[in-house]
Length: 461
Ligand code: SF4
Image 1 (spheres, protein in one colour):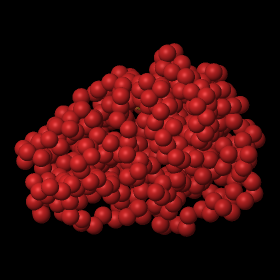
Image 2 (image 1 turned 45 degrees about the vertical axis):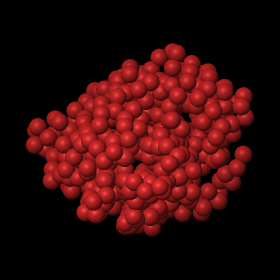
Image 3 (image 1 turned 45 degrees about the horizontal axis):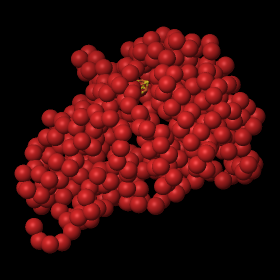
Image 4 (image 1 turned 180 degrees about the vertical axis):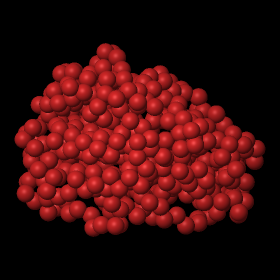
């Protein structure tokens, strides 16, 4: 190869529906996986990340192309790969969808990486340079010690917040989730000092910890979270942040205290349902253990630390009637949940849910890969048991209308303000509710005007 730097193009494809719904950049998160791949690539490569969250992809001349994809963007990833393959430029595909459907992905790329790519990326590049690219690479679940640092300098500057990952894996086994299949069921943790070093390098006011559960599943992992938050305070790392955690975070006063002191404004919690029957159906063991009657108590404990709750609820389960859906929407509105996520149950490949619905011939869209574009959580893609697909979709529109109208959101914002005594927590919850409204309704409706609503709040502290 001639004596010039080779060009690597990493692409973050965007699902067309999401492009339609993308009104503001506060709804999206930087492509951390591609940043890590870039971080693992030696200096003798010129690297660019093309991010369709900001700009629709158009062909650029490069030497090698890497594309990641969530399931909903898989078809788009294949379309982009085809543009390069037609020109004889090698493409490698990776990410969670490819790992769950390797046989499919192999038809659309020269090479694929199944599993976590960190352990094999150097080999992929070495093989490419020798023109000996293999069809498939399998990345093992490595320890997260000395994890590579993402090249954040390559992310589009338009993102509203930065993100970071400190753990991977989940020992739980929820019916609709493929995290344990992709990242394994062992909870792996990065050393706290490594995370703090990385945090110190991030220049942002707002941060999202992308971990599926920042506090983990044991006393020691909760204690690690405390050490992390204390370290942030000691090192003077000042960012407002949110994370995902299991509901039992409410029972750990020390975690909440130091989370709040280090900048936590909101926690995303998988509530799924306010009823035992649906929790059993989804195998949501943690919530069953805590008990639906104790949800409000848990929310109040979180609020007492000035932190809002982003409650993720799922609609359209086999045990749901249309009345249950309306009740769930009403529950979200009247409960201590501050920001309401309301998605339609979506069987992603690699989940038990997908296999079951497929076996029962209840999937509505099975012309893959084109039909993956329907699998984005806001469309009915299966035959529910206790209603028709149309009835489920129509009822979802009623629920979304109920939950995310301006009057309800304004009341919710005031309620959050009262409960948390934090204008920032109230503003974060409101922003999050608006994002969800805007994404659910897409271009069918004008986006809600956040400045108008925040005007009455004076969102500073
Ligand atoms: S939904 Fe959350 S708790 Fe359940 S398996 Fe997935 S990551 Fe684990």
